[in-house]
Amino acid sequence: MKHLKNIIKKYFSKNILKGFGAVTYLNGIGSLVPIISVPVFLKVIGANSYGEWILINSIAFYFSYSDLGLNRILANSMTIDIASGNVKEALLNFHKSLTFIFIISTLIILGTILILALHLQLFNSKYLGHVNINYIFFFILLNYITTLNLSYLEAVYRSSNDFTFGTYIISTIRLISQLSLLITLLISKNILLSSFFMASASLLGYLVTIYFLKKRCAWFIYKTKIPDKIFFNRFFKPSITYLFYQIGESINMQGINIIVGTILSPFILTVFATTRTLVNSGKQFINMISYTYWPEYSREFGKKDYLKSKKLVNQAFRINIYGTILLTTILLLFGKEIYLVWTNNKIVFDNIFFTLLLIDLLFYPLWNNNFYFLIATNKHSSSSIYFLIFAIIQLIISVFYIKVFSITLIPIITIIIGFIFSIIVYKKIAIVFQEKTLFFIKYQFKKLLLKTANT
Image 1 (cartoon, rainbow, N blue to C red):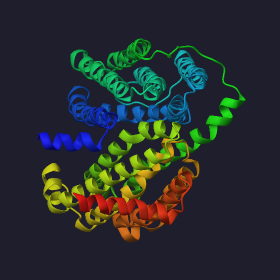
Image 2 (spheres, rainbow, N blue to C red; image 1 turned 60 degrees about the vertical axis):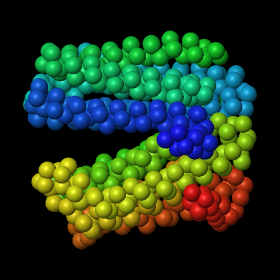
Image 3 (cartoon, rainbow, N blue to C red; image 1 turned 135 degrees about the horizontal axis):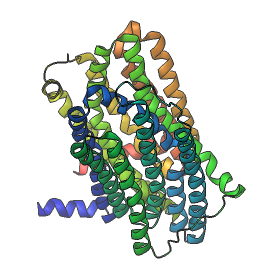
Image 4 (cartoon, rainbow, N blue to C red; image 1 turned 180 degrees about the horizontal axis):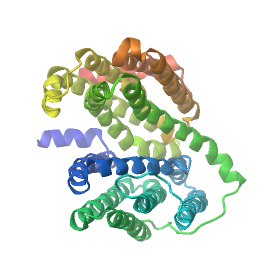
């Protein structure tokens, strides 16, 4: 065990190890909350009311995109600026961003309050009640808007080399917010009151986060400044193209689910969604690794240490490749048994569809980590546009041909698109490192094979 710890410390920096722990905690909360929530909601308010809750929650969620992706791009820019010694510029952009998100948040909240004051009906509700559902929606929306504002404080933690603590505290606030909802629901049986406590916990968490930032970050000053033309010129393009990537992800997940459910059947959608969820556990691992390295990419790029940046990219690439091969092997050997136990033998196992999803999983690390590097350095614009275009193409092909090929069509398209997108991303990252595409691909795989041979 001691030998293993020494190997880990030798190959991975403290920031990477601590960051991975924080990201694991973040993902653990993301997985745990739905597991706890479903039985609580079903027990207290029943399936029909829970269905209406899911609907208004899904609608409110899209307001978390209302800043057009600025929060992530701000975090990258601040990290790069501070790493290059330009703290004043980083702080100035943070103050301008605060004003931007405050204006958007205020307009959304005031608009919703106006609708409530005029007693306008936002939703047709059979179970939660016409009046109640409007107010429930307001508190859910307030919670999402507060969480969006929290992400701007998270940008300060990340840029000040305090990514680990920032991830822990903001993840904990989200956990407390959801637990406030569930505990109040169990005690009061009142979904409106529960929604109020959920939003209140997030607002309190926002103030707590500011308090800790003032304690831990010497240069942090909380104030606002009007955004100007220079600000929008710098941030609009990378922000809007990052939003394109998020929309593409949404199409690939929710959009395809809608196509399968409406064109084929709810039963086939159940087979499709559950099988994809099982295989996507491998993709979740890859995303965790890439997200752990994200702040380090921005920091080293800001220092103009391109050699260190390149080494970090290749280190994460190797971990993702090894991890994907291991997870694919486990799923290939035991996936069917895991699936049947997980679904209590109530859903048929589609072996061909499952195998195609595993092949798609093997292609995923070829572009994922390199693309994260492009995002972390705000060099992702054209790649994000391609990602959205490919997502739309997949959706259109699915609409016209899924009746002929059934759900096996989806992973086939994804494999082809994944291969093409990998080449595009390799071209873009090679440009960043001022190298030829083929040379960078050879370098990355040569390092992979050499490390494998050495181990």
